[in-house]
Image (cartoon, rainbow, N blue to C red; front, side, top):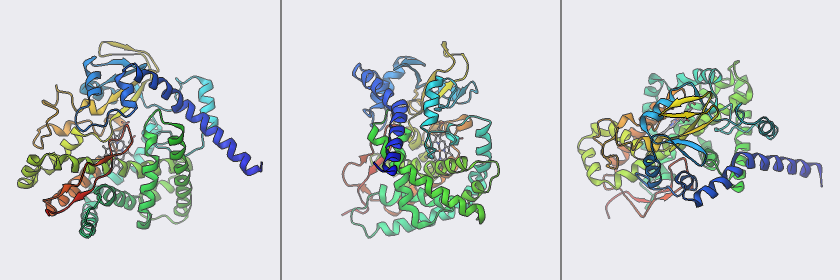
Length: 437
Ligand code: HEM
């Protein structure tokens, strides 16, 4: 074997060991639990791709405010989710958490390829303060009310341009041709990435999205991490360029920050890119599916366009794009009449919290006039609450309102096809007819 193929074999073995520790073992355990009817394990294996309420989430709710399944605490209770997200006795789940046995941490450190995986540190999503505060403060300004107000006109132009192009297509795909394109164009502009990169950015994001799930197969994991190697190379080169010649974009802010290492810069650039469109595409896609399947609500909305902001909140509540998050207790905690030991994983079902009947009466009803829809937990909460929520809301209102006002007879042409993801509720394809025949 040549030195090159030797090196490749070593890398592959390392990746496999990492996959085994981070996904493979959990996968075997969850498969066993799923066969025994465990509702959490059923969710982990993608049995739960329904619109609206989920029988598995409801089964978990029936077991109490905080229950233990597949060796993990889990809650669908709104108040409890909210409290835990804001409780600094809980931190994020990371492969270098002190609670993980030392030998496993050692192997994970040795097999770390330093890829910009949004679910691994130093992505801010999975970094606790004080590092988290440092990252978030640096990029926060780009998502302030003023910054988002300035982007509004661009969102209108991008949406209009895409809708003009849809006109010539007899059977457009509203995901590929519209829902995915609006957010990728805007986040690329924020980061200062060129327009001819949009399709590559989409490919990177969509192919690495499964990493948000746990219990991946080796093939899915490998495919997703291969994609990240390309992302790393691209951002490294671009950051090199911007360090020497910064622009007025967000990537230049990261590139010229003396507070961040190169790895921190690349990881957080990749996080901002992915977070900027992987979820908003689903707000738009899920919103189109919901509105076309609830013509009474759409009719009301067309008569009262002032209801659009509330409608976006109800879409986020009803079909939460990020289904679940998790936290680890950093000390023993007594909560919801239970004792949680230090180092326990608690899964917070954001989708379940959004269907908590104590907070959202008749939760299965999709109601664009629901008064407290905006109380949903689709953007999570606490220190890791979504940084881009203002941007997502702004894009959601502009894109969906313009689409339905321009094409009031819009309807889906066949059932939309879901993506094979667990934690992100997403459609892959949504063929449509824009006008009545
Ligand atoms: C409908 C669209 C969106 C949804 C549903 C959504 C949802 C979420 C959720 C649930 C979290 C926190 C996860 C946790 O607590 O573990 C989060 C974090 C985050 N989101 Fe969003 N997001 C959306 C759009 C955006 C956009 C447009 C951006 C722009 C870049 C963005 C940037 C981020 C970032 C950077 C974080 C990490 C924040 C931190 O850890 O401090 N998101 N998002």
